[in-house]
Each structure stands twice: as structure tokens, then as C-alpha cells.
Image (cartoon, rainbow, N blue to C red):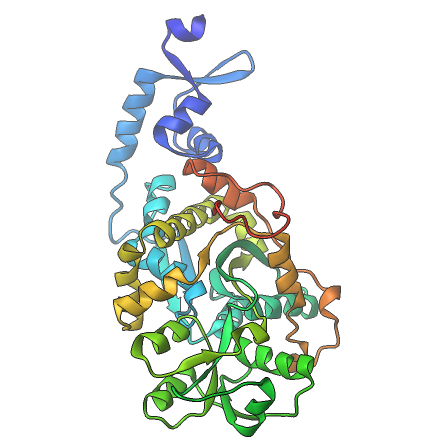
Length: 395
């Protein structure tokens, strides 16, 4: 064949050898004079010319420090839930920057990391256009869903799942050691601490509603204050989630009760503004690759991931590892995940009269699929998976 006589290789072979996507190859052909030849309807590359071109490209990779950034990206994250820890590992290990260096070797891209106190701060940052990519929990994702109906210029899209906990595994009441409670109704005798207008308070009030319990004595208190009050024996009961449940067990300062009665799962997700994503598809894929690598690290090498989390949170590594092991790390979206997001209803906090079933969370698995393909990992299907989480398969 003519192709074999002239040592030509196909686009697929170039993608495999350089470990890049088809869109990257097309962009390099257009903007970086990547040598190619068209034979019939197919595009081929001369091996020798390609090697010389790539060596020249590699020499260009060192960008002068005083060169202005061609793009500034702010990634928002919060350490308040284990399910949202993926960006911390990405930041500490430089996974996103590594992927950006592969796809834009001659461009200076300024990646900034914004640590927020909670998911709602990240939502505000996305609304203001100050945060481009963020990882937050199902309650904040549902707030985004609702705000997109109120504010037509706000178009958040869910790109991938973060950490997940099944129903009955997301939240629990924590009481001091030695406390004996046999029935949920006994909580009515105790003041219960919870964070203000957060996922925890939402789940608590939903519990009251579903069990027709009298209004409890709810105290609004930060989670750190609740932990310290437990240590000092000054707290009767509080609502907690991972990683605080693992920290309480690690320190032996309390016990979790009524976790199954709460029947609450917990899901984190990676979101971005849809218009920003469409304008920066290669960067979006790069972040999805970093997200998949972080998830694999949590699943397969939690001891390697834990020090990065411990550095950020100042928590004991042992408690971090315990918490990581209590969460499912699976970036794939399931129908049941979307049902959970659509079920969470923050409207009673925002004074908006829409039923949760009237508003759906917009999502796109396109970039996650491209990222998995480029990393040679199992590729999620083009639509959310049906049924329960697959026990042996995580993406």
C-alpha cells in the first residue's frame, strides 16, 4: 500500500502515540502546522516529519514566566464534605495543570483555586462569573437548577459525579457516648445543632416532615463548633455527614444514630457554566481527565491521596482514609443520581414556588466520555446508567 511505502500512520495511531484526542490533533493541524497529507478521504502523517515536528513543539513548551496568560480559570472547591474532595487532590498533585500542559504546551494558562466555606459560596461565585468549574453537593446543585429557571443567563451543566453515598449512608445524628435513644420521637427532648440553610438542615426538616414529628429545638451552629462542643461534652445532638462522622469515630467523642431512618443519600457533582464549556471544550476534557485520575486514586491508592487531604484540612491521615473508604468514587451519572438531584427541593429557602419535578438538572456526559477514552479507561455510556450503582464498575 502507498501508506506503508511512505511510512504513513493514521490519525488513530497519532492519537495513541501522542496520547491526545482527535480534537487536539485537528487543532494542531490548523494552528501549529502539524504536517499531514490527505490520501483519498483519509488524513495520514509521515512518521519522520511528525517526529521532527513534535521535537520542535516540545522545545516550545517552556513558556516565559512574564508571558501574559491566554486563559485564566478559577476552580472552586470546599473541603466540608468528603464527597467533594476530588479538587483537593487535583490541586495538590497538579493533575489539571499536567493535562493542560499536554493540550496547550505553548500557552500560559493561569489556574486559580478558590476554597469556599460551603457549596452555596461556590454557587454565588459561578453566578458572578468568578468561578468556572466547581464541585459541590446535591443541595447546591439543586439550587443551581432552581436559579437557572429564575435567571435566564445562568446555565450550569452537570459534567460528572463526585463522591456518592447510598440512601441511609449520607447523614446521621451524632450524640455523646453513652446516650441511649430508642425512637426518633425522643429527639424532641433534645436541642439539635445543624448548619444554617445547608444540606444538613434541609435533610433534618425533611425528616421531621416525613415522620410527622413536632418541631424540634434546632440550633444553628457551624460544624466545627459542633465538633468542639462534642469534645467538651456540651452538645446533646447534631446532624453530621462525612468526613465528620469518621472524625467522631476516630476521636471516640460520639456515636451515630438513626442513620437509616434519615434514609438520605449524598451526591457531589462537577458543574460549570454551559457557555464557558462550549467555548473551552479541550480545557473541560482536561479537567475531566484530572477528575477521573483523582477518583481512581481514591479507589485504588487512598493512602497516596490522604496526605493531600490531610494537608488541606489539618485532619489526621487515619480519619481521612477512613472517610475516603466510606464513599463511592464513581464519576458516571446514573438515572437514580439525577432523581436524587431533582428530588432535593431548596425552594422553601428561596421563596420560589416550583415543584422539584418541574425542573431538571441539565447534564452532559460528552466530556467525561472523551476523557475516559483518552486515559484508556472504561468509557461511560452516552446516557445516564439505569438501575442501581454497579458494584464492580466505577468510572
